[in-house]
Length: 249
Ligand code: ATP
Image (cartoon, rainbow, N blue to C red; front, side, top):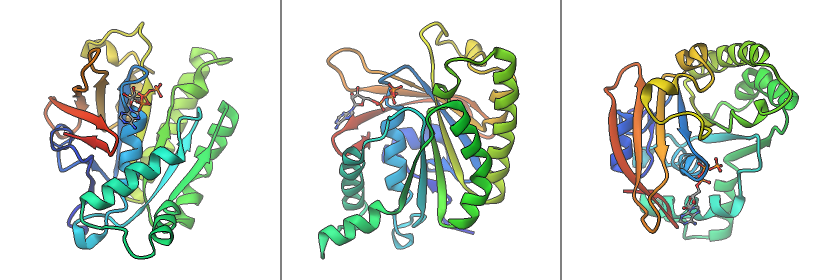
């Protein structure tokens, strides 16, 4: 068993909120938040963190990034990646450009725009992760977008139920961390109770952890993260920042 089966966020406070030194492999974590609350930035940070070499206490692994809404930008990922490697002591010095591109190759980007493409991708995931055994992190950014139009509530519930079953099986059997972003609409209140309403009980039940991210006040950079549901950690609140280098305390 790996001595560090968690993916650090690079914020001690956020890791504490998540419990167990960061995002756990073998489980599904949902990041909930309004637009601009930092969901995508945290995902990019995790895609960098998952690459930390084992000598430095990391997983030395790869990530699969499923983008449903053009959230991903490679330049921002590069920025976070090199800052993260430097911070953990893995300075990409010799033949810098080669090193950098090796690291970039360890993020597998797939776009899945539209519900049909998204569903077919999820159903081929078991095969995809078998072909890429070093993938220990799967990002779905976001789960909200494919379901925005042209689907009834009943259909949505049915599709989500089947999707979440596939994801749960993969996370456990392949010991992969699955991180799903869910864009709350402003209609959904911020109180814990009403969060269950974001996609319904069956969906909430499949996620092992739900973390609510909040955007900072104007002219401040302090952001809050609250663990609002967990199978094995107490509810908790922490702080983090988004800097040019990525997620930090
Ligand atoms: P959406 O639902 O719209 O995709 P999100 O929750 O994914 O939103 P992000 O895109 O992750 O939000 O966060 C955007 C915020 O991240 C910006 O408002 C900005 O404050 C911060 N941010 C982005 N890039 C940088 C950077 N290079 N340096 C500092 N902060 C940044």
